[in-house]
Image 1: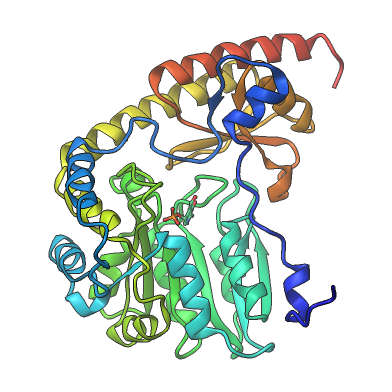
Image 2 (image 1 turned 120 degrees about the vertical axis):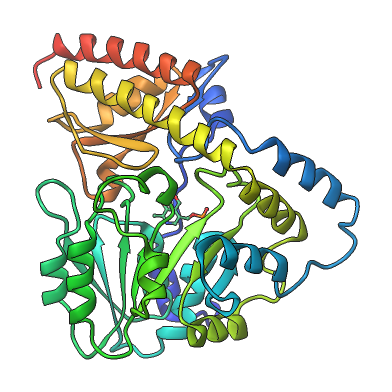
Length: 372
Ligand SMILES: Cc1ncc(COP(=O)(O)O)c(C=O)c1O
């Protein structure tokens, strides 16, 4: 039946998640499968968050606090901001969606993004619908901020930089971010998506978006409990922005978009800095092992400051992706992101990373016998 859907909806690509473990097990008849394709925290959530969610579950007959007041206040205190500069979302995905609702209203509006970068920015622009201006990353797969500045116009309503970027893991330094902010058209914020903030926070020159906002600069900062905090399944993200933007998002968002369990889990996780520090340390070790093994095998590696790393195979990625799959390891083939020769490997637990390293060795040895 040809329903009267908004015409551009049919052209939107649905989100493509990494292959589910059960599907790979069934299709390939494998007993155990390791999934290193979704940039989750393999070390698990904080035990404190688990306990808080368990306690909150007893009251799941009651609607959550629609304002998320306690979590907002706690985040404001932690990052030295005012509570009216903090907004919550159903993951940072939810906040990207809501930013589109409050900023994008006309087909002439433009959203400037890096290419490749996080796919949900594209979805938000397609939904509006409005123009998406894609600016290629540089040769080291970093955002090229001068080129992004050159792409700005009076029609630009939002500019997105994922810092670190997904799928590349690369970061841009504070000096370049400040220069781009100076070039923004009036009323257009720079959205700094810091989903992987905790992994990059101590890299020299890495900008802390919260600090830029507290200086009064026009930035929207997106962060999440899905990565270093290990709460991806709960769906809770947060943003820092000017009170006017926060107020607008509060008007359009679903009133109960962060569940009661998510709010309690996030509050407890925020208090467990030892858990975050431990995840960051183990992640760094995993990143090093994955990157070193690729370099030793003669491949290029994109310098990552997140919880995944892109490997340049120098040849189409699909055969390697599929060979790893047959050995029970799911990674991301980056052809879907416009990087046809790369795979993206998320850090796993120490044991999972070891399974990957062995599988990678086997695949590499086998492929060296076949000319590229
Ligand atoms: C750059 C970036 N931003 C945002 C998100 C969304 O995170 P969440 O909606 O789980 O907070 C992701 C998830 O992979 C990401 O890589």
